[in-house]
Length: 348
Ligand SMILES: NC(=O)c1ccc[n+]([C@@H]2O[C@H](COP(=O)([O-])OP(=O)(O)OC[C@H]3O[C@@H](n4cnc5c(N)ncnc54)[C@H](OP(=O)(O)O)[C@@H]3O)[C@@H](O)[C@H]2O)c1
Image (cartoon, rainbow, N blue to C red; front, top):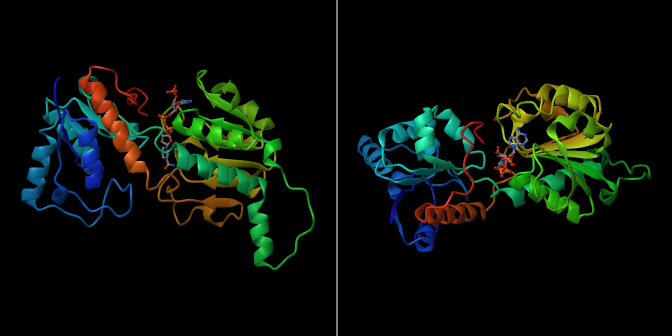
């Protein structure tokens, strides 16, 4: 393969389109900003919700989508559009999905086995490692330093009693899932002197992690840790892996942070454990169902910090995704295996 015709069917600033083109000159980069919704914020891959194409513009958009060897992003982030173009464009070789958990988009398209084998799908795993690691450190610190109690006392003008507050460098934190995010979390926590234990399904290189336990040991490992940071993708195998049993075994007062997927924690059991104080504090960026229902008891629990799945958003994200895409384009053109391939069995 000498050249790669790439179409960008999802909002991306012009300077990053130029960057991709410059980074790999063998790409023929097609984009038409008039066919794409304006971004609402940096890193917005969906764009203005009110945006609509005329019939003629939609036809043109789909023609361009169907003319590509490779796509930067799922067209309109729509599973139906992905299915349509994979089935309709025999030249399509590769689709890069912009979320880290892009496997979910591929799964939602319900593609037949032969299409999953014919087209390579990649995701942006690892790109969100640093901002989410910062959120995780923020959550672990907020729990250790008893942020809810301080805020409540301050609101009530109470000069609280002198009391010992946990010191992070004497704490042990369990990081569940050692992909790009989990490894970034482990690195930052260990730099603060935290003893970091990892839970993963295999032994991996993870700087800062003192030891790695098997996922099957979660229920016993949580007895000894001061905080748990969940960094897992949402798959059938990880569904409610932080189960009622796991939550029943935690050290009283533990902090829980979730920056992976909400489906990985049994949310009802989490609410109960937060309400009875077994879990001291939770910082949650992701939820079983999003947006979180206004009726969710999580909103009113004083020991919960709710972040509306925004902890990863930052101004540098798109640049990292563009760099990853350009690197993979070069690999594809050179006949090398792609980085960050979506696992099309477990879909993450
Ligand atoms: N909060 C947010 O806004 C946000 C942003 C980005 C990502 N996320 C979520 O976070 C997830 C992880 O992101 P990432 O960048 O770290 O992705 P990643 O680098 O692709 O890592 C995913 C990791 O999950 C592991 N894994 C998959 N199934 C597992 C299982 N059943 N048990 C244990 N480990 C399992 C994989 O193990 P192997 O090493 O064996 O493959 C891999 O190491 C994404 O899939 C996404 O759902 C959330």
